[in-house]
Length: 309
Image 1 (cartoon, rainbow, N blue to C red):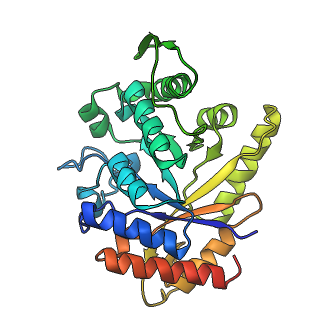
Image 2: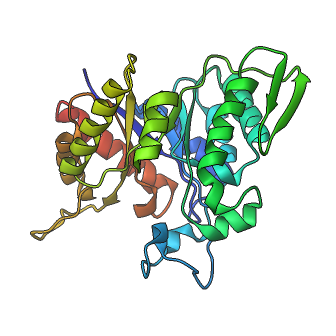
């Protein structure tokens, strides 16, 4: 069976969000992409108080200076498409009030006919946590756990009732309900987050950082699932942050997913290990505008399918 391909929607500052998101979403669906994805970055601190991903000295990329709101972006895409699934990779859950986020996702799923995939994570930026004002960084895991509880309650039957550290829902009717159970995908960056995924989520959202590393992480996750008695399969969507170029990358040490469409296809093939069925190709950072993004997306999609993947 062919792997499924998703496309990252245009959220960065070189794009006209209101015009380009619907146009790219429609084009992606026509090309054959089966899912459309967004990510979350809410601010760009100057000067940076911590490095990218919390790594000391690692600079934030300039493309993060302006990133459109993920749920607004997905709403624009939902209105312009009919079939493509609509995913978040990822929403930084503790930047959101749990009840409001659960309702927003339910409304988007109802409006789109049951196409939402809720990819949730805890993030790493202390400045984003401070700006959001929902909870301190140190409580990020507890907030994610509460959000999962709140989503289960809000998306379930009425009356909805819940009591947590951040959220109190008196017995209430809460609608609209999702069109179908919204699949929840989580990262697995630590032993605790891996257990949370196995016990509570439908799928896994790894970032591609090399075929060997992905294979090792996937093997560990499957072993953990067996240890904890999980019977249903774990869905997987690999996020691929590409550095596309019209010319092949030349050099002995080519980073994964860097270079021409043919080189990106080579890396997709290397990462397509057994049980990993979907790849999110985020091509927006390398494109100058929406027209170029659509052209590159079509080229890469066609190259992947021509390779028999």
